[in-house]
Structure formats: C-alpha cells, structure tokens
Image (cartoon, rainbow, N blue to C red; front, side, top):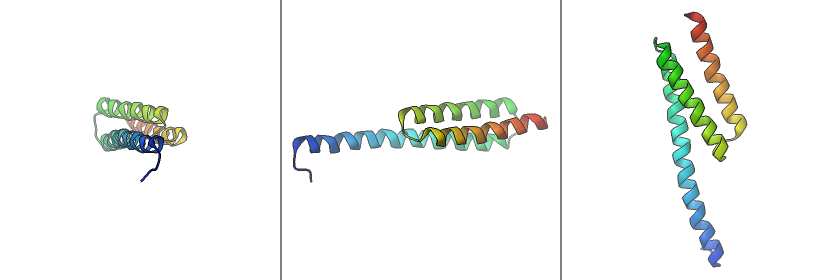
Length: 90
C-alpha cells in the first residue's frame, strides 16, 4: 500500500486510466476482427466500411497512446493492402 496521499491518488488515477485503455484496446480488436472477417465476404461496400471503421479505431487508439503509432500504421497498412487486393480481383 502506498504511504503518501499523492501515491494513493496516483494508484487510483492509474486504475481509471487502465480501465479506459482496456475499453479502447478491446474496441480496436473488435473492429480489426470485424474488418478481417468482412474481407472474406463478397460485398465490397460492407468490407470497405468495416476496414475504414477499423482504421478509425486504430487512429483513435494511437492518438490516445493506447497502442504505438507504428503498431497502428502497420495494422492499417495490412488491412488496406488486403482491401486493395480484393478490389483488384473484382
């Protein structure tokens, strides 16, 4: 247990921030999973919408510092590359 009041406050604020980060990270994972699943579907309009939603969530998470900006860039690149390959097929 922390000894000073400021240390106790820091523990409380860290817990709040960790909870918010967990929500944001979960939202990113869900969006990316939905985008990957839609890449195997036939409807390119829905696929494009899902990929753009995932890109948006990745940008938000990177902006808040939940994930590293290069991690977000790498994931966005992979998703958009798969989307472009799907568009090239059709």
